[in-house]
Length: 134
Image (cartoon, rainbow, N blue to C red; front, side):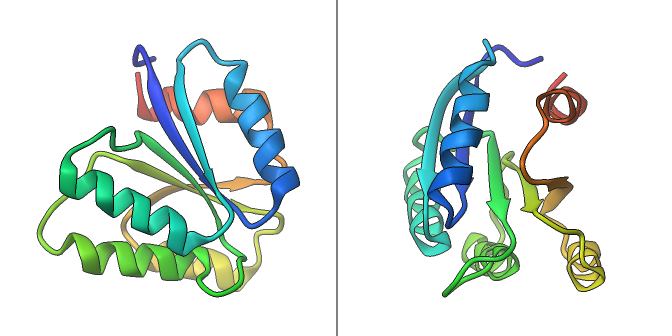
């Protein structure tokens, strides 16, 4: 595993954010965790960090179902704003149910790399992180 990882949690549920942040705090490789209740807030902060090359997160845990801007709209807007730039951030989609429509939307995009069920399972999260950061 990489020595330290910085995380963004983007989920409109305070309860899910608290649980996920608490889970990440158990890992010795967690450097920082930033939480956002709105996808637009997370996107704004991410782009600020990209533009300033300042502590870009290694991992974004992104809820699919959120008001105003959902997870797939976040990804679409991120792709647009990055233009020709690339980032090394891994985006993991969070969902409470793998609806066929969500799986199809996941398959059509190219930025997010994993689909994870909520609430997150510690062993599954460790496995997925190990797969992408070892």
